[in-house]
Image 1 (cartoon, rainbow, N blue to C red):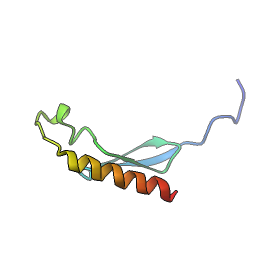
Image 2: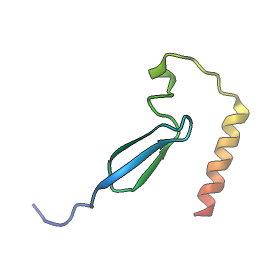
Image 3: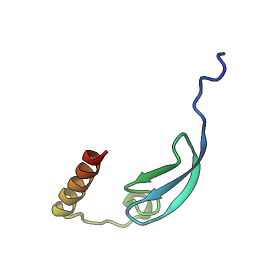
Image 4: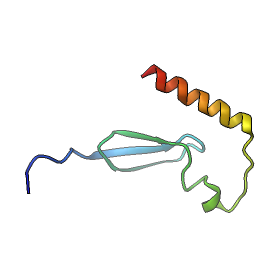
Amino acid sequence: MKTAIHPETRVATVTCSTCGTSFETRSTREAIQVEVCSACHPAYTGEERRVRKSDRIERFERRRAAAGAR
């Protein structure tokens, strides 16, 4: 095997933007932002939530603006 070809991993903080839950894991990035986690996803919690179409459009526009700023 070749040596020194693998990226360096470090402790990363994963944060859910929906409920604010965070936990630590190992990754090549220092921080990871997710939209839905196991603490707030309806498949894991058993509750059904209706998402308004306007909320989805606003969220898409925020992500699009953030991507353009990079």
